[in-house]
Length: 103
Image (cartoon, rainbow, N blue to C red; front, side, top):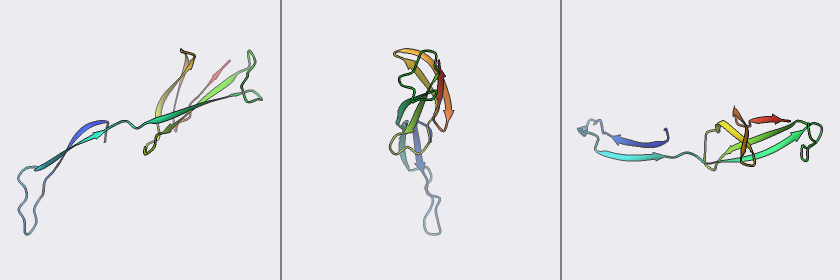
């Protein structure tokens, strides 16, 4: 189902002993909400753990996005990386571990 409200109805088609219902006689409103997710950011630099890094040495940041409890689908889409509140880049992936290199 997609996110939002769906109206589910039921109608009995009858059998050898019972007539079918003429119209759907029972309805249910099913609400589907977005699943929660968590994110963890790590970094790696050339030949070291990447933190602290030296000026001019590339560092790659990796964001691992995981589905929240009870979610069945893997998260897909875009992760935005920020330095403080300033956007520095976006990365997208399916699977879902996007990374972005910086110098």
